[in-house]
Length: 109
Image 1 (spheres, rainbow, N blue to C red):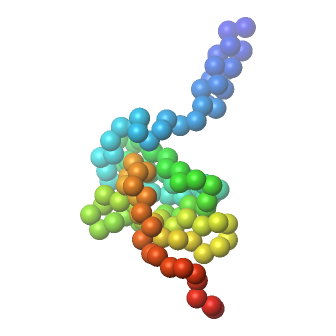
Image 2 (image 1 turned 45 degrees about the horizontal axis):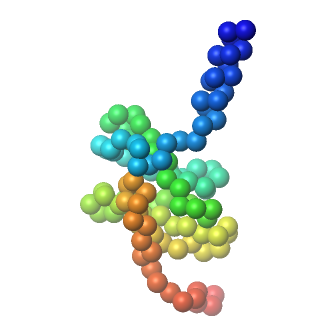
Image 3 (image 1 turned 60 degrees about the vertical axis):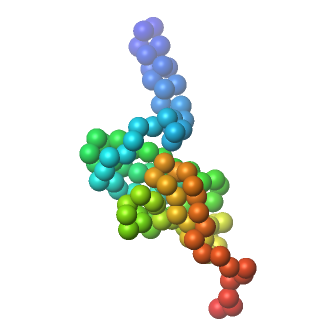
């Protein structure tokens, strides 16, 4: 009976969503940023303390490109499926998402 209860408790804990980024500790660095195979979020790995932070910017496809020159912002594109993505930057906590390129429509190919 105890093994079943322990297994059920473990299953419940593993199924909980990750903590919001505001509740996560500060990143120290060095950092590695990757997008997932599903392209539904970006994961930041902090190599100094072996922690991770997940960033999600809605239902669009997420693609990480790197960090700003000062290392304080993440550079990424968000797209609607296979459509061309738009370039953004965001704080390392996922806040302050900024559209970096403004255009009315895409040029003809």
